[in-house]
Image (cartoon, rainbow, N blue to C red):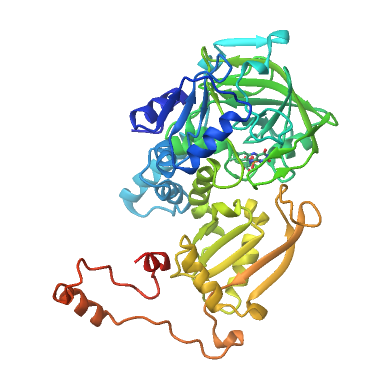
Amino acid sequence: MAPAASLRDWIAVLERENELVRVDAEVDPHLEVTEIVDRTVRSGGPALLFTNAKSRHPLLINQFGTERRMCLAFDTPSLDAVAGKLEDVLEMQPPQGLAEKVRGLRKLKSIADSLPKTTRSGPAQEVVLTGEEIDLGLLPVQTCWPGDAGPFITLPAVITKDPRTGVRNVGMYRMQVLDERRTAMHWQIHKDGRMDYLAADGRLEVAVALGLDPVTTYSASAPLPKHIDELMLAGFLKGEPVELVRCKTVDLEVPANAEVVLEGYVQKDDLTDEGPFGDHTGYYTGVEPFPVFHVTAMTMREGAIYPSIVVGKPPQEDAWLGKATERIFLPAVKMTVPEIVDYDLPVAGAFHNCVIVSIRKRFPGHAQKVMHALWGLGMLSLSKSIVVVDEHVNVHDYEEVFFYVTANVDPKRDVLLTEGPLDHLDHSPTLQFYGGKLGIDATAKGTQEGTREWPPEIEMSDEIKALVDSRWAEYGLGAAPAAVDGRHSSLRQLLRR
Ligand SMILES: Cc1cc2nc3c(=O)[nH]c(=O)nc-3n(C[C@H](O)[C@H](O)[C@H](O)COP(=O)(O)O)c2cc1C
């Protein structure tokens, strides 16, 4: 088995796994679909294929809305297993002996096979609309929230090339539909698509692919360094190259399996007011100038399916795209900051608001070293707060983390207030893009860090635990609850008992 090769194969997988419901009742993509999806996502419900959303084209939504579907998308038992595949390649060492050489060659081949390959034709171009035929109104584009400025395309893979190097970039940037042939292009100031735009001398060609296989859709949202093509990551994670076709009106290639492709361009100083839009921060983002995207061709598969996603007050469907990034990028983060054991970006923190990180602490100030490292690392640099705990703390258990934050922290000594770049959409800082950052060192402290002797944590001895295990039946207390490991206990489990 391998991840689904196209959106249609993916829909077939979801149906086979009882993870998709077709809705034939007429629904309005203006607000009504959001309310249906919001309720479905929050109750852990299925992907929805609306066949009658006031358009000839069906609308697919909530394809990524649970951990199970995210794992099905990657055809993996867990997201950590996907990370393991990447870790395997990142940690390649010079091989010793024949067996290791063969294994090494296989790994190198898996990298070589990740490169996208161009084919002569593909389903994405079964229908080609140009000039006056182009009409974005053909698609069931959602107006998600009552205060939104209009309909927004929310799940696009936006493809550009760096005009200086020719290196491709794929990013997921929302697009406000302005009229039949124009949208806004919301690439934020820290994003690579915008870098390509700024590097262009006048006009930058852009292609937007909608309705891809799930791994390629995910890859558009992955925070790769600028010089690495997201389609190569997609090929690596799929285990086979992404097939591309050349666009009809611009010098770019797009995934051959796309349901819909919008070809066109943006131009220097050709800006429009974009927003408001109800975003993943849980607030409306304000009106700001962003480039106008002019569509020069709209190509499609016959009976194209339009993909959408709703973002808003967390949790929403994008929570699992974010969790996939958190897990998949952990090995890359550890390459730079190897003392990191694990990290968690809580969904309720909209990802950029909080990072909890556990470390193997070795020296005074180690927690602060890790905070600064993360504030200097890719998109993690935009994190507003970082909590550092010791290696034995389960970063995914927020109550356990809370225990150590309240028990181990002397606010005067262990809270670091600094400043730096913040997420484009963060409404809280006084200045947009820049403001305060909070670091909380919740690790155990040593005397070198100016504390009194640190007390030992309470833990029952293994001997007594074994004794109680062996005698439990004699006590007449029913089934035996698992023994609590004082340092690894889950407070949530304890409280439930
Ligand atoms: C559903 C969804 C919508 C997103 N919308 C935007 C957006 O409108 N603008 C933006 O700059 N980033 C947006 N992002 C985040 C980017 O896709 C992400 O930062 C990605 O890494 C950007 O690609 P780049 O690093 O090649 O610029 C969105 C992510 C998701 C999952």
